[in-house]
Figure 1: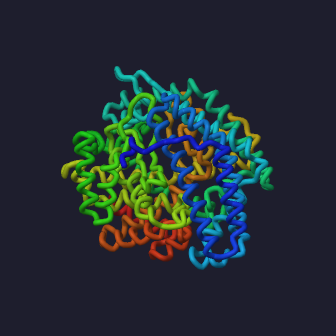
Figure 2: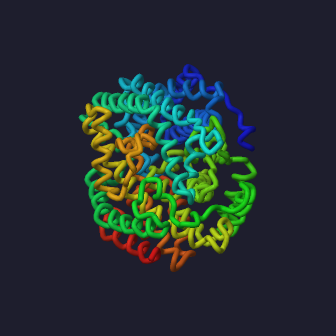
Figure 3: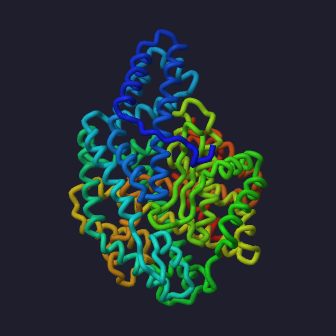
Length: 558
């Protein structure tokens, strides 16, 4: 079934509550293991249906944020999802206390129950109105960002379209694009401050109602942190400061020399070569044709996956006015179909759609038949290994996108940007720890905090006194900080894992692919730490491992 043919129907609150309540009562009353499993399956299937309607409405809304119908549908789910969560939580409680829990654990393993216990710590009925308000504010932020229409270079561009100019070989053009982008954010600075301030205070209130002094621990529970804690994350951040920040600083100096700038500014950081970065060649249709060839040659599994995605029209990647910013992969559970959303802008990031987001989608597709759904719900640190490692495992096919004359340029930039991302990612993480541990900070104090962290993690950053950027507001362009608190450290942990896959693939691509495929096949049946052990990959929580993999990357880059 093509995405355009997928039927959408609104999930009405009362009907859903009636159905979920009936399933809950029958589940509690089950007198045999067989009956318990049967009712659980009914509940699983109905919940997949609800989540699929939410997914379809969200995808169609982000495809065109000006579509009033789907705008109202997203608002509807912002309103009712917290109330449905109350019933889902009751079902979770019943599962954990069920007389046949041992039978379920014997069939499905223990991890699903560990994660269920974590989920209970993120909700109680007293926070329903707070969750509704949190959802509305998150949607308000996303809609504000999507509303950007900026006149630049004779065109009307959204923020994603403007991003393409960050790689322009004309320094004046790069600076002008950066100033235009900053000016748009600056014109909305008060609103961005207001939305975030409300989000912090709502999340702090939620934490208090759940029995915590800070939202930070609730954020960890929400992110399904089932095998590491704040102390281990802090140790990881310190490893980044010691081993990656100095390397990236030296990389940036070399980059500045390469492109011929003596005073490197923020608008110079994305240009890596004086004649321009490697850019994909061909039309979107030609890019997808090579992407199809790449996945057909990588393995029989990826061949099947890619043909399914193309035949089902599960891509929307062309940027246009009114389309939401960014990119994502969203699984439509009842159709066993992952959808990829992105904004092509003519840069190498377009190929990232066919590798990063396709890594997410491949993992979703590969686990589509795992039952129950709880065993497919891997945490985001695992999910980001799927995506980031796929970026590196597809390196042998990059010449087909960039041409033989530019493929090494692409690989150099990809590896360098992957390393440079990590200090930024851990900075986002530390920023959020401070913000939620001190919820009464003013917006101005948060901006000062960001500038302090910039000095620690990105000492090379020079904003050239561009308003908005120089005021410590750069973080307001990152949707995750508003919408998905504490997600960003997962990218960083996964990036170290992806670099480990890259290092192994340099000597034995086949072995690296088999380890990756095994990791993906386990879906959510193991924790992040257990997957590292099972696949034999080095742990990012060991500073020496961070040092080794970054040294390998530095050697390759040199």
